[in-house]
Image (cartoon, rainbow, N blue to C red):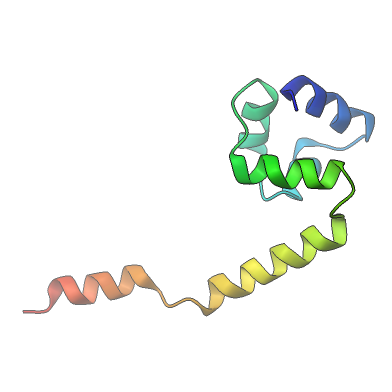
Amino acid sequence: MHSDDLRDLRLNRNESQTEFWGRFGVNQRTASRIERGQPIPPAVAILVRLYLDGVIGDADLDRAQRRFKIALQARPNTAALTVVRASAP
């Protein structure tokens, strides 16, 4: 999976970097870097390969992003806990 091939695929689909890469949890800045040759993070590379092979689809990726957001909201604010602990005698 070469960066030029992924860029060409995205352009053939008439999608912006934000549209194409956003489905894999990648922001536009990182997408630009990937398309210019920076290595793709392994987790993203796996998702892209599964997507391109038809193993997972847009609905699967949407569901995973919703679950991730829910998990982030349910997690306690660890930064606040660290500050409280650090200021305790």
